[in-house]
Image (cartoon, rainbow, N blue to C red):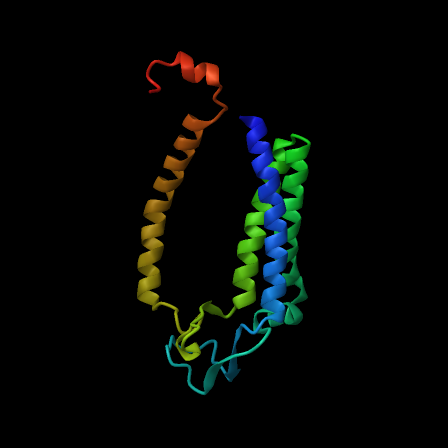
Length: 185
């Protein structure tokens, strides 16, 4: 069973590397991306209709942030290095390397998507002017205050449940233990 998981993990890591790199090239060289033209008042009130600014389709716009802020290149590098590290962990049976690699890959790939699209949160392919950005999708101060109170109340509950579930489910289960347990089926 562990050998089958190693084979699957090897294929999954190799596919992750290849598809993430191919997706990056497609986004950089393809005819996709949105850009905001005009002035934006980033400190102004939330407004779904940005006055004086227009959203237009622009080739390669999703990679412009990396030219402006080179430190952001860390995200796609993590997205590529993480699966490589996971692959090394799988091949050498290094569980810590495998966990660290998959964690870094997840963070890198998700951060790459978010950093590439910034300031867009939800771009619209059919009507670029209707795209949601960080400025026109923000909440009011009252809404943010209510969300903070709810988070303060419920986050400890969620974390406690998650910790309990991880403690209960910790460890490997062998076939012998499954067969020996009459309550399993």
